[in-house]
Length: 416
Image (cartoon, rainbow, N blue to C red; front, side, top):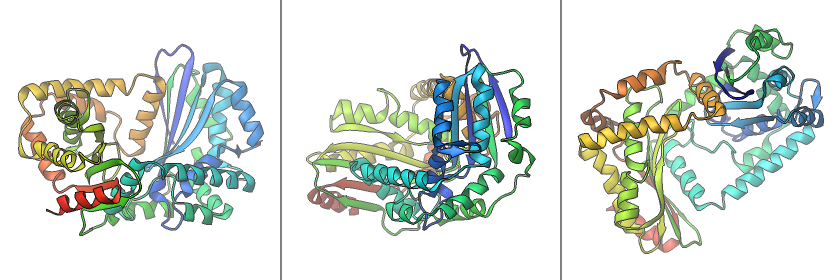
C-alpha cells in the first residue's frame, strides 16, 4: 500500500482517501452489484467492532466515514480533526482486513441497493444512459451501473462476499491524506495491527483482477448505433457518445479540451447554440469522466417532443464541428484558461485534493501527470485537437428515451 501525505493548511482538519483497485468493472457477469454490496457492508462492522459500535466511534468524533464503489475502484473516505486520527484510521484497516459481513447487515444493504436501483429506473436520463452503455460496452468494464441489477443482487450470498472481501487485502491500494494530520501518521499506519496483513502482503493480482483486465476487450461490436426506450413521458432525453481512450493516453488532454469547448460554461458551444440561439433544451452538457479504460465521451440534452428531431440535428452539428473544423486561436486561448480553471475548481477542498490524487494513482497515472499536462497545455494547437477528434469521436452512438411517437421519429431521422 502506498501512503501519500499532502500537507496543507486546513484548520486542524484532515481527509484520508484510500483507493482500492477494481470496482464494478470487476463484477462477475452474473453478480452485477457485488462490489457495491461489499463496499456498503464493510461499513457495518469490522475487526472488533459491530455495526453499532463502529457507528458510535465515528459519530462521537463528529467525523465522517464512507465507502463507495466506482467503476474502476472502491474508495474509503475519512474526514476528521487531527487529534482523532489515531482513533479513526485503524477502522480503515479493519474494513479491509477483517470485515464482519454479518448476514442481517448484508440483507439490509441488498434491500437498500435494490430500492436505489428502482429509484434510478424512474429517471428518464438514467434509462437513456443505461441504454447507451448497453450498446457501447455490453459486457465490457463499464457495461453496467455500479449499483448492479436487481436479479443479480438477489443471488449474492454471504459466501460470495467473504470470497470477494478476502481479495481486498491483496489488491493495489493508494492512501492519500490531505490537510493537517499527525506528523508521524505514515509510521503509525505501518505499525497498526489492523493494517498488518496489508503491509506484509505482496501485491498479488487476484483472479478477480485478472478477469477485469480481460473484460476490457469485451466492448460490443454492435451493428446498430441507436438504442431506443419508449415510455409514457413528454420529456425527451438524447445521449450521443463514444467510448474513447484511457485517461493516461497522451491524446486524452485533447478530448478534455474538446469537452470544455463543447460543454463548459456559458461560452460553450452547446450553451450558445442549444440554449441561447435556438432555446430548444431544458438542459444540455458533456459527460467525460476520468476512467482507466475506454472513457465515455457523451453529449446529452433534454428537450420537448416538438423540438426533439431539431435538437438531435443541432447536437450532431455540434459534434461534427470539432471533427470538421479547427478551433480558432481566440477560442483556443479562452479554452486553455477554462481548463486550468476547471482543474483548480475541482481541487478546492482537502477532500477533493485527496480523492483526486488517490483516484489517479489508483488507475496507474504517475504522480506528476497533471503538472506535466498543464505544462504541455501551452503548446497544444487547434490542429492537434482536430486530429484527436477525427481519431476518437467519429461515428457516435445514440440513445433516446421518450414516448413511442418521438422514438419512432428520431429513429427514422437517425437511419437516414
